[in-house]
Length: 139
Image 1 (spheres, helix red, strand yellow):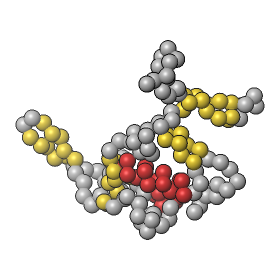
Image 2 (tube, rainbow, N blue to C red):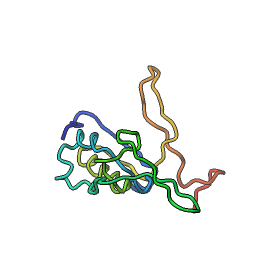
Image 3 (cartoon, rainbow, N blue to C red):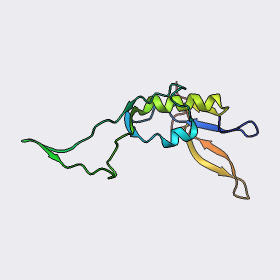
Image 4 (cartoon, helix red, strand yellow):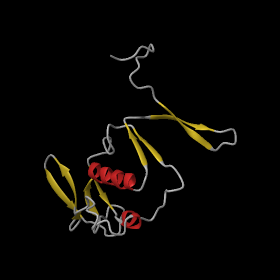
């Protein structure tokens, strides 16, 4: 691994019931950052399989489809990037983080950051779970 967390404690609170539960369904990603974190991500069976091999742009109207010229190098150029199911990738990253010693607590939403007097981070306050607006427990 490229990180050694043996001397620090890293905790992640995840609002969803599991890592990736609140992630959008799909994305096109550049794998440079993934390769920096996990140079052997393909051997680790990361859920990143489908490379963009062709692309086109068109305007769709009620009367038909009108092809537009595609400019290579534009911000919309995804040639060579990968099409992924983001929920699967985030879940896989969560598993790798756990293997590295990161503590992940699903089902908990952070409400605010708490600070020491010297302005260093002390921790977080979480939202109330299982409590009605009047303070009574949810049944």
